[in-house]
Structures are given as C-alpha cells and as structure tokens.
Figure (cartoon, rainbow, N blue to C red):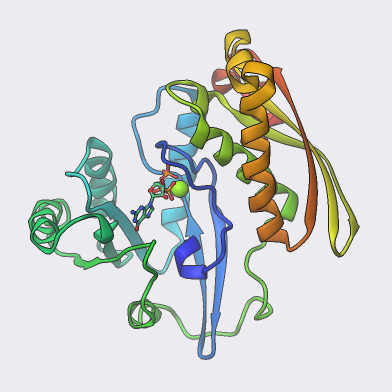
Length: 273
Ligand SMILES: Nc1nc2c(ncn2[C@@H]2O[C@H](COP(=O)(O)OP(=O)(O)OP(=O)(O)O)[C@@H](O)[C@H]2O)c(=O)[nH]1
Ligand SMILES: [Mg+2]
C-alpha cells in the first residue's frame, strides 16, 4: 500500500505479522479515487491477538470491490498463502480478485516464471501480475483495478491520504522500527501506546510513547546495553515520523512490562486491538 500511495503510512518490517490492524490508504487520481484497506495476513493464530488480526482481515475482505492478494515471489508458497487462497476461493464468486506477485526485483526472469507456476496452483482462475514494491507500481496496473470499481462520488478531499490520526501512524512507526531491530519472540511481544502527541507548531511535535513488552527479560533486550537498542529504535522511528508528518519530532520512549498482553482481553482492549 505504501508503494501504491508513494507514502509511508503502513508499518513495514522484515518480521511476519507486522500489520496488526486494518489500515486505509487513499489514492486520488485525476479520474478516480481508490480506497485501499491494508490488512493483517491470514495466519495460524497462537494468541488472542492473532485471532483478532485474522478476524479483522476476514471482515475487511467482505466489503471490498476487489481483493488484491500479495504473494512473495522470492519464496515458495507458504502455509499462510494456502490459508489465504482457501479463503479467497470460498469468496471468489462474489468479489473479484487479482494476485500481485511481489518482490520481483529479488528473482531472475526464470525464477519468477517458475514461482508463478507454483503460485498459480493456489488460485488458478485469477490473474497474476509480477510487481515490485521497491521499484514502484505502474499506473497501467492501477487502471486495471479501477475497472472493477463502481462509479460514484469522491469520498475524500484529493490531498487526504488516510483517515487515521497522525498519532496512531506514529505508534505504528515506533513498533515497526522496534520489530526491525529485535529478534525471535521479542518483536511480536511489542505494543506501543502514544501517551502524548503535542503539535507544538506546524514544524514541531513533541511525542511521548510507551513501548510494552510481555516479560521482564524482554525489557532488558529492548533497552539494550547502556540504552543503545532503545536509542537505535527511537532514532529510526523519529526519522520515519518526521518524514510522514513533515514536522521535526522530539520523541521520548519508555519501556514497560505488560505481562502476557497478547493473550489478555483487557490488555488487548487497552492497546486498541
Ligand atoms: N526486495 C523487496 N523487498 C520488499 C518488497 N516489498 C516488501 N519488501 C520487504 O518485505 C518485508 C515485509 O514487508 P511488509 O510490508 O511488512 O509485508 P506484509 O505483507 O505487509 O507483511 P505483514 O504485515 O507482516 O503481514 C519488508 O522488509 C519489506 O521491506 C519488494 O518489492 N522488494
Ligand atoms: Mg503489512
């Protein structure tokens, strides 16, 4: 979605299950306005958080005009791809779908052709288009999607990119930075709450955030030796927030333990999941 909008709104990291909630992105072209809903990936849930993510994704599938399914051309189909394909096949009659075979920049032409054959078995009746989010998305492809959309009025002003608040996007940027730098269970045990988001001026924002982990031992890992890890996370997040908001940002992050929050209804609710 970031590549389509040419703006960084959605959390991205090299770890799976980075996206945890549905997130809208609006693309306004001279002749059309497209509203994309980025969703968590369908996966085998092992916590209540995962169940909520799957439910949110399935729910979003229901009222779309077109399903854009993103598979990763740099790897073979995974169990999760199978799960998603099954869901889409069950839905096929009512809502059209198109597959985007992403990360084409990472494979040779021959590999790409081979992968396409493999992925094609998942959804044999769907069109497959190789893309690369890194290289950018062709306008021609977007035009193909427009053909599936109903005619109607513009819903949003032409310069509006999303309906989410800047502070919520900032929380996602802090979380994705942390997920990028941390390993194993730790990235998945992180949640971020914005405690204060003061727009001091057009040019300056003051942000205080709490980064939650599930266990005391994870707190030490997130802070790191002499606070080095937290500093790295904070610096990367601040740069992203500055580029998203167009403001200079002062960012303060504290780390707290919220035991087993991924499996606790009350904590999940508090954290907005
Ligand atoms: N080389 C290359 N890397 C990409 C491309 N698209 C995404 N990535 C990388 O792939 C990783 C996963 O990207 P995400 O956007 O988090 O993937 P996602 O499908 O939304 O995954 P979840 O939110 O975790 O379900 C990140 O490290 C991205 O930088 C691409 O076209 N080419
Ligand atoms: Mg994502």
